[in-house]
Image 1: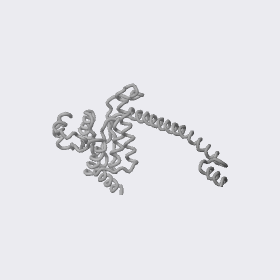
Image 2: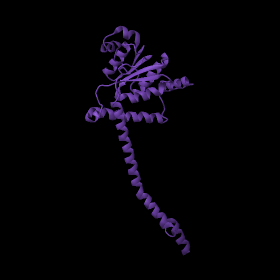
Image 3: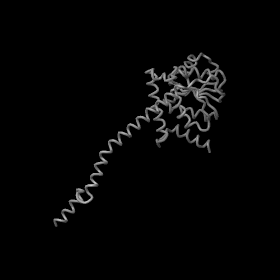
Image 4: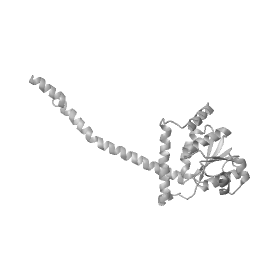
Length: 242
């Protein structure tokens, strides 16, 4: 009976032959885990910071094309007067036959937009479409994809600020099907040669946009439920490829 009790004690506590070695391994693993976790956190942090540096450098090197190639149409994502002016100038110069202004506030009238861009009534009457449904970049992508599909455009100039361009290309490119996107970044400030490091506001904008870009990448990788408009655009994109 004593031997049996001792045998049961060995199995329960790990004491006895081989038990000490197993316990030692478990202790070593427990001690090693914080170091592994710290190394993983450090690696992820370095990757995040390095990615931000690459993103900021890429954006800061963007330049507004002096003479972009001819396209079928132009899309501008609202967010500043400079974007709107650039898009209208492209339309005036014949770089596209039609312009979509996406993400216009519901209270903003066509007349207000017309006045803000020089008051060319004829141009706005014939060649400018206004989207008031999009509330964010994802909405811009969905409405832009619908517009491109409805007009069967094959090449489109996309106008937005340089810092917003990577995410815009990503979101619009997912839904636009076989149409070719030509980026037209609008540059409001010279951030080249690391200038973004010396400008707190520029650094803040770039860091915020970098995080949104990462979220956009993750959203594309994860099986999240799409919106009704986005699903319709995606189905049309797949059908076009087939």
